[in-house]
Amino acid sequence: AQKVTQAQTEISVVEKEDVTLDCVYETRDTTYYLFWYKQPPSGELVFLIRRNSFDEQNEISGRYSWNFQKSTSSFNFTITASQVVDSAVYFCALSEARSGGGADGLTFGKGTHLIIQP
Amino acid sequence: NAGVTQTPKFRILKIGQSMTLQCAQDMNHNYMYWYRQDPGMGLKLIYYSVGAGITDKGEVPNGYNVSRSTTEDFPLRLELAAPSQTSVYFCASIADGRSAEAFFGQGTRLTVV
Image (cartoon, each protein chain N blue to C red):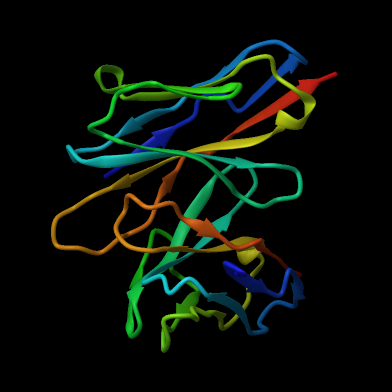
């Protein structure tokens, strides 16, 4: 069965510091998809990124970057020059692609609560 | 384009009462899901549907029922509410396959007292 572990329950940093959120996953499939979602205090879930298992290229989007390493089964998320608006709970999630169809949903980690202090 | 719409946003139920959480999407997505989010526990899958007339259990289905009579709607039914069902419920939809982005509703905060 698949599993996603976010070992950091809560991280607190001062604004403008860089911060990395860790995500480690387990799956038996060779084809799978990894996601990051942001949940601000307002409660909605905001999609940040999707990565498939065949694409290990790191990705950068503004102050956000993601490091995908299959060798360590990790998909870490770094925020550079953090801002107060980055304060939120961040979820890493995994979706397996099995043959035969049937999209049986995402497996989420427990989330990391990121606090950016001014 | 409204995306995924959940109603109500908040609800307080007494133990033993029943209610239906509504979820509708206007993107013609085949796959729809219900998750619950408990504090510090991430989201867990309750039920999912890969198309009208087809539903299946997720990780935590006990105490819930679903139906999918149309592509657009995927209601979640609680028959006998229990305090353990106090949670935030999210509905989501995906166009096709597991690679696509999941679109989430705004959530329903349910308290059972």
